[in-house]
Length: 232
Image (cartoon, rainbow, N blue to C red; front, top):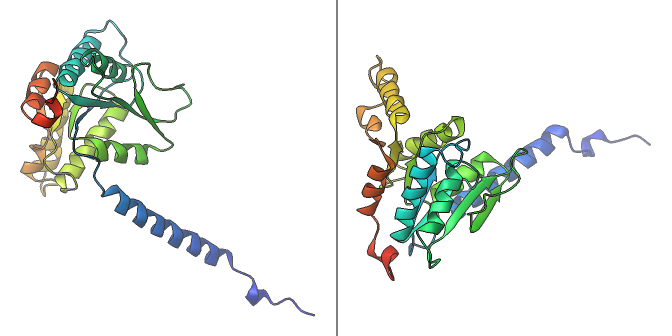
């Protein structure tokens, strides 16, 4: 009796099957992601450094910013961690004593972070940065970016690029502080002014650079729909 190897599945066939299944799974996920969240809320995501501590002027600025927006009826979304994320979630609670708005944290599981900061009221935890970033995009009506490091820069560039290719439309991206203004100048110098150009001049105008958190709050204040302020 001989073994018929032709009846045994090859490793390459199994890998092809897995790859096809993953493509189908992503197709389903993409379809579900197109379903918008309820539009009865105005949600503002605030990005910023996890390393800023309480008592730092930036911490106080972000706490006041979030409190002002929360008082207008905005839900506040952060990465759920420490630093400026905690400041924003804390401000969300300060500005909403009646607890009518949400203080949301969209976390990623990291070995050096034990959980969401204590001011998060609703938490989502992701295993990958990819799904977490997608969640921010799906949930947010506006983005305010405070100074931060590599993680914050990743968030800025992702939102900027999605606005460039119109996967996001009409969603403000507000960059606060000189570090982001210099990033925009860098992009203009090395992308737009390059021959041939790597980006169009209008791409550089997508983010709106401001000097202070108060300016960012004023911009959002002109956009918050009346429905978010009902009962205020």
